Length: 638
Image 1 (cartoon, rainbow, N blue to C red):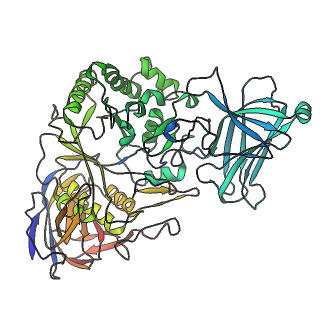
Image 2 (spheres, rainbow, N blue to C red):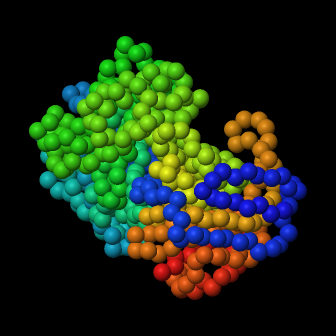
Image 3 (cartoon, helix red, strand yellow):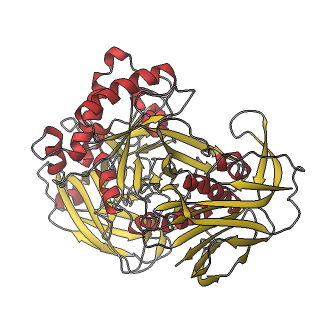
């Protein structure tokens, strides 16, 4: 059968034969350049950063040493260990206390032995080093019987990749910090850092003893001295308008003890709370509130901070104990935006950033809902509106949350489902208004009927959904795929968008779709209609029991005009057959961008990191074109 779809209005889907595409006939797409549906949202496409799957430590945070301050532990039991460290040269190693240190930095490692005794750290599944690249090492040492430290980057069955000797080690019983720069002489994916201690005369006779702490190794080219350059470049290619951080379930934690509290993540990195992460590892908080703001700034994106609202997965703070959470919200805005003579603005300035960051969005809670959430949201929101009326607030849409109290606020909607669901009902989720508020689609991704590393059909399903967001920008103001990063060796949640490895990264097909939508934005949303066939599928519910019947249009579209006057027409072929398309209302020269692949499960992988790529070519549109199976095609017409 055929349906006529006016994409600025709601779809009424009709039933067709199950699991069969309609008879092959030309789809007709009509664009009316004179009919402006509304203005486009300038902040529509952004990114969502959650500390999940070693996305920070072991991911974009460039620190290469794991358990660098000996505050790591054995899971949730909180037993500190020397995990990720190994003795070399017959050394004896054990965990020691630092009784006079900061409460969050009370442990170090003691190393005993003879000449050549030391320790090695393999980082996050190996340290990837590149020939000619420099790596900055620092560590704190309190030595007895030690005159020098020999440091090296080593790999099995290879000569040392880089070496340095640090002389002048003090034996005065005090802590001293030492630094060195190591330049790799070869590429290696599985290097390790080794520190060997050279004894003085006393240590040579009696054996030496050294206490080691704060061991850190960063690539010299790290962005802002903090972030892996190659991964920041992957983010920059997405041209995000905003960065939502730091989560996600990481904001809530299972209990309030595990909840993310931003004030514990600023200041001296060695004095920050190390924290058991709900995604099954310890977080250093080396990337804290300040560093997230720096990352957003480096990307030219607006920060969108998601703050704990006094609720975790299993606990809720009583209303009479909520004052500190209200104050946290006020203080985080002052830290980000306040003058240098304010209490928290001065702390930002002391951290090296006297200029305000310009925090524009604040989300209160993550996936919290019900009456308890509504009370706490209203309490925090009232205080923020009174002191900072220019900050835009975001409320959660979770567990039947009722309408929250100000139409200027944005509602955060989350979607995780199958490609069929995204191509079907979710592609029209916002054709009808939801209320007198804006929509922030804070998390969405195809998570079922796809591959561990994503898939072509999953990405095309997301593209169909994103067309619906573009068509309805009168209500949808912000959107972000989730999750962003996952270390390829630690994927508790799948799929993700970017997969760091020790030597680089690879992306899921969703990254290409996100990039293409962000690169091809408009200033005005134009009226577009599609006459196309449909097909039906049945899929299991993504969450819970039951079956969805999905009615999917073969071809879906959005159309916009950018500030220069170019017409941007996006078409998605949701079928696994080529689709002939007749395009009316627009024609002329420009470019045609095509993203597709060999089959529905096509994806990138560590072995084949560039299986899927988009192709861009000059193109003259003269009335018709053929869309490849499962494809996103973008025409940009001058």
